[in-house]
Length: 121
Image (cartoon, rainbow, N blue to C red; front, side, top):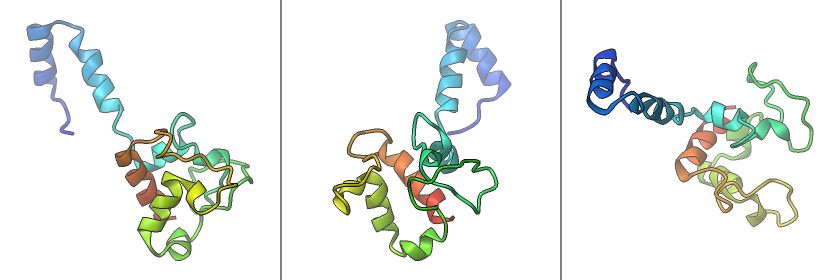
């Protein structure tokens, strides 16, 4: 998404009224990075169960799931990592990991961003 210039914002306000700016801010705010999605407790919430020792921003004492470390070695096939995040019950029906894709917790694009972030850990 292209950043909105001050001139564009001013023209929108003059043309459509002041209500357009909050709508523009909401659309910009929705573009989250994979790390932000993984850390957000209303989205991925990975830190609710996992540690990510190689990311200094990942502050948690979680110990339910395995640590998110050397993921590209544990999942050399990125598609299998994506499947795990989309629906972990495919590989383990008794898992406590939520099926983020199957239950529409994350969109397809959000899952791709989380996969890219986690794959780099």
